[in-house]
Amino acid sequence: MSAGFASLALAGFAFLVLVHVGAQSMLLKASVGNDWTLGSRDHPALPGPLAGRAERALRNLLETAPAFLALMLAWQWSGREVPVATLGASLYLGGRAAYLPAYLSGLRYLRTPFWLVASLGLALMLIGVLFT
Picture 1: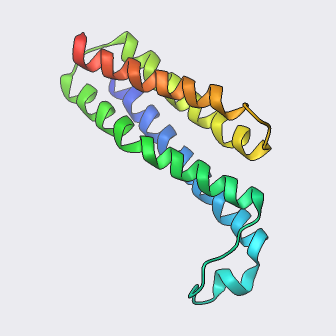
Picture 2 (picture 1 turned 90 degrees about the horizontal axis):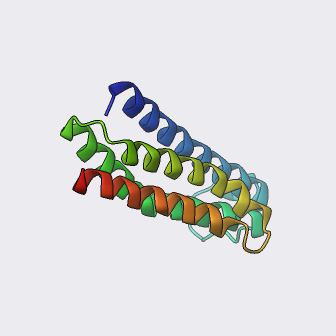
């Protein structure tokens, strides 16, 4: 894998995490107000629907993060150019980038195709690392 692509893919992933965390934080603050967000947080917040979706989207991203990072690391250590893994990483990042706005929209069935694209990307990365 070229160091340039690896750096760009990892930076893109870090950016996605920051966008998810920022969206979740801002939507939660808008939902529950400053008293809770600046307070001791001794009691759980009751977020509105949009803040709840942002929380679930962030959690979903973080569930797949270890697989993406492990595959990127294994691929980088292999030192090989693996086109199927490059495609997989691109699909993962693109699918994950589209997942948050799709989930926040609240439209039924909209987020699922983007989740599938990202999952296919992970599968292609795994195939690339193991079989090429």
